[in-house]
Structures are given as C-alpha cells and as structure tokens.
Length: 446
Image 1 (tube, rainbow, N blue to C red):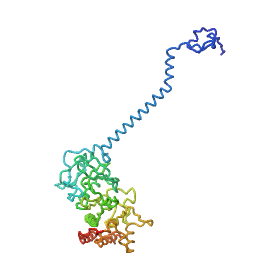
Image 2: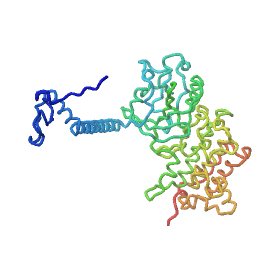
Image 3: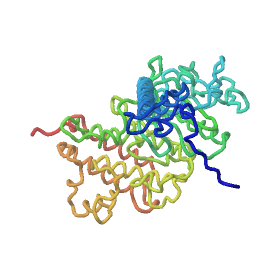
C-alpha cells in the first residue's frame, strides 16, 4: 500500500470545527490570543462533566457512603447489644430445639413434691413413679418433657425454664451451673451436663436412681430434661452457696468467721449425707467429694451435691479435675470406690480445719499435698500450727478439734484398707459434736 499525504491547507476552515488548532488555513497562532476554539457539541459538554465527576466529587461520594454505612452498622450493633443485655440471657441452654420445647397439656408422668429440692429437708419420692407404680415410657411424647420427681403438681414447665433470666454460677466437673429466675419468681439452679456418652435409656435409668435418693443432707434432684443435644438437671437454688466459697471466698476485714460449732456441724451433715449414699449398696459412691460440692442452707446445714453424676459423663477433659481430693489408687474418675470417697472426705475435713484449699494441691516447693503436710506438722508436735487462725480463738474446743483432725488423717490414709467406713466416720464426728457444749464454741475473751 502506498502512503498518501494530504495537504490540510486545501481544506476549508469549517473542516476544523470543534478543534483548538491554529495556523493556516486558520488564523496564525501568535495573532489570536488563546487560540481559536470552535464551540463544542452537546456530547462534548457531557463528556466534560463526566470527566469532572470522575475526580474529587466521585471520591467524596464514595467515602461519604462508606462512612455512613459504618455508622449505621455501629448503631445497629449497639441496639442489638443493649437489647441482649436487657434480657439477662447469659444462660445458654435455650438452644434446645423448638420442637423439643413443646409441652403437652396433660400432667407429666412424674411430678415434683411441693417445696421439694435441696436445702429444705422435704422428701422426694422415688423417681419415675406414680400411684400405679409405672415408670416413664420412653416411647411416649412425654420423654421430651421436663420430668419432675415427686407426687405434687408441677410448679413450672420447660418453656418457663427456657424463658427464665439467668446467670452463670460456675463451671464444675460435670457441667456448667446456672441460677435461673423464673417469671413467677421461683429461683432454681440448673446444671447443664457435658460429655454425656451413654445412651438415652441408660441415662434415664441412672438419673432415676439419683432422683430416688432421699436424705436431708443430700441435694435432691428436682427435675431433669433429656434430648439429643441437651441434658439439664434442675435443683432448688441455695443462696448461701458452697463451703468452698464460705471458706476461701472472702478473707478480708468484712468476713464473718466460721466458728468451731458451725464447722463441726457442717462436717457432721456432710458425713451423714455420704453415709446414706454408701448405704444404698456396696457399689454406690459419690465420686466427686470436694468443698465446692457441699452446699449450705441459711442455717449452715450441709447438703451434698453432684452425687451420682460420675457415671453419666465421659472421661474428664483434664486428668486432674478433682486434684487434691482424689485418692491415690483412683485411675478412672468414673469408677470411684467407697473407700476413695472416704479419702476425699478426709481431705475435706483437713480443709475445714486448716482453711487451706487442697485444690492448690502443692503447699510448698517439694510438692507436699494437704494430708502429708498435716501429718508432718503433727509428727513435729506443732498441732496448733495446723488449724485455721479463725479456730485458734476457741480454746475450750481444742480437744475436739484435735480429734477431728486425727479423723481426717485416718480417712486420708494412703492405703484403702486403713481407712474407716463412712458409718464409723459419722459416729466419731457425732460423738465429738455431742461432747462440745454450746458455750464451748464461744471465743475466749481477748
């Protein structure tokens, strides 16, 4: 192809409309200030406007939109958080599926005795029984309801429980405990079990055995709920809390000291509760005795909690979940003998007398646990150095305190055969409590 050159000078001025060119055939560039600019077409004006918007104006619009969107999101998050906090729904067992929350109109197969629950001394009837003696039908729709123990009319149902405002009380060996306040004002304690590995039928059989336990020094099971995703146990709430909290929770100036009379009564009540458990059969044990599982009434009466639950859950997530209380021969926390219970109770007695929490386990750099530390002090005949400072004021009860200390040492013996039975433990505590007159529990004048 050839290259053609066009002489632009032969073209008329009109051929260069809309341009900013100068020079022949247009006027000279030097003679026309600002050059000759032929007015542009309407399309050209729109093009200029688009060029202008593509700069700072468009950037400003984008930035403003982003900032506005962020502000809207922050406001929504604030409103949602405020709404959530106003419900006080720190409890998380409301994740039970909606279809499992539906409550039938008829009464449950088993019902709670009016006023039942731990801390009040009322008896709970044998679990899963009614007038005709029949148990729970696992194939019926009632199997997905909140099941109560006892014979009186039920006080609340599952829907009431799931609507309750609640707060976390703490995480224990077998699950998380909550304080739930129902709409009608009733306050209950709910334990949400974790790591339940047994079948539904086996679970119901075992929990019915737990519900049949009836003793004034036990925390009776009030109701339970079972589904594939949730296993809930319902007890009465005890505002005094646990022995652990009372012993170790507040050592400041505003603390009310636990005198000898209160401590000895707590020891006796706990011993009676554990003795009752052991009386139900040679293979029946508590499995998790510790001060946080000894709950107290307003009058400081002891109630043993968490009994019968060790057979419901799987292996512990951490091997030392009852460190400080576990007998040396125990290798499987789910299989604890009655003698191992006695060891744990012995550690509990030493904790009650020394004020030292065995959960910290190691009392010095040599790794000596609480029983061995007490034994070493007693061997050196420094027995008075063992007791909690709050007990040293009660000199008239010193003999009884030494007797209880020796009982704790006997219970925490290294070999199971050297430990007394709980029936003997209860008898010895009862005798030393009877030998203490009321005035003996008063502190000596300073």
